[in-house]
Image 1 (cartoon, helix red, strand yellow):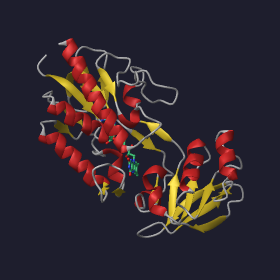
Image 2 (image 1 turned 90 degrees about the horizontal axis):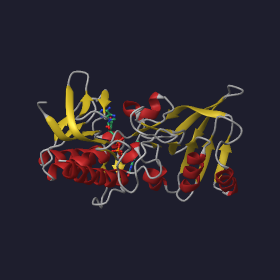
Image 3 (image 1 turned 180 degrees about the vertical axis):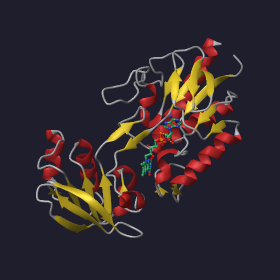
Length: 309
Ligand code: FAD
């Protein structure tokens, strides 16, 4: 077979690019598939990142990702801005296909990330990073003494709402039903917090504001009545999905669809296949943890290659 790569990396977020930096510096000449639309991953959709170590004044998400990309290229990683549409990970060598070409590799690092569920509003996209957020850990700090709305009724929404009361003046939870889906302990904690109030049976039908969030439009799902609620921020916590369609049926996934790895390593159930970042992690979901596991996946694949030459 003509050109069998040492390692192919699928995904271009902090996990994929960090794996690429390490693999390139180990002289493995990695090939990275970045995706055709969102090269750079989830941080391309945000503004200031203030919690990635090394940037005392913070850095814009797209700039951080551009730096990571350049760092990978500097050491010889080959980057292709295309989508992988099919894989055969059990084959030897492993087969990776785009719409137009087929590639082969001895080992593969899966770093496809995950997607936060969206409300599906144009205004939500437009104001992402300008008051609309999917991550309280990332963005809560920006809303000291401000009014905050959280959408959702599950554990994540309650956790985010409780966390955000550290910063916000008032946190309003908007939920489509009249009861929460969250576990009892999370509900009790939220109900006991006097900085949290609830708007039941309601959904956010629009986000209002030109340069930043100023209010949300609410629609009562029972009466159809519409109202406006002034707020500085909207945190959306209605779920999260790993991008594992590509490997479903080949790789072991957990009950929520995340790739299972043999912690603390990044090894999947298939020899020579490793996984890193948010496609594995439903607990931390941070750029730095994704980068950390991307590093681990590269070191794991390097050792696996050395043992299997
Ligand atoms: P991702 O960043 O999701 O990257 C995965 C990439 O793989 C994507 O580009 C995708 O297109 C590509 N891909 C997927 N499938 C394929 C395929 N088949 N072929 C080719 N490419 C593919 N974290 C922080 O630490 N600090 C913050 O301030 C912060 N702010 C955030 C703001 C927003 C709006 C969002 C959405 C997230 C934020 N996060 C933040 C979380 C952080 O972005 C993620 O935890 C991190 O990006 C996960 O990295 P990853 O490499 O696992 O995946």
